Image (tube, rainbow, N blue to C red; front, side, top):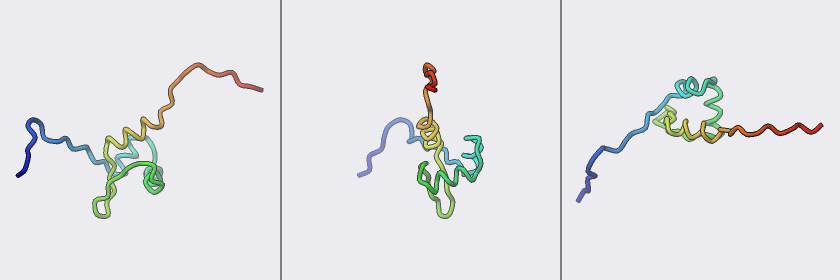
Length: 76
């Protein structure tokens, strides 16, 4: 027996190419490929193609966010 969920179908996340991810980050394709090689960002392999979900890219950006605060006085 198969159970069906009532309501909306499951939402699929947008898969971005490495080039699209680089444009969205404002960086080079090489930088995104290095993130992938170093396993610093989650990715999906579709055969020989590499894709990054929009959600994973947003999570990577959020993880690097630095909150502003009061400036600390430099010690000389």
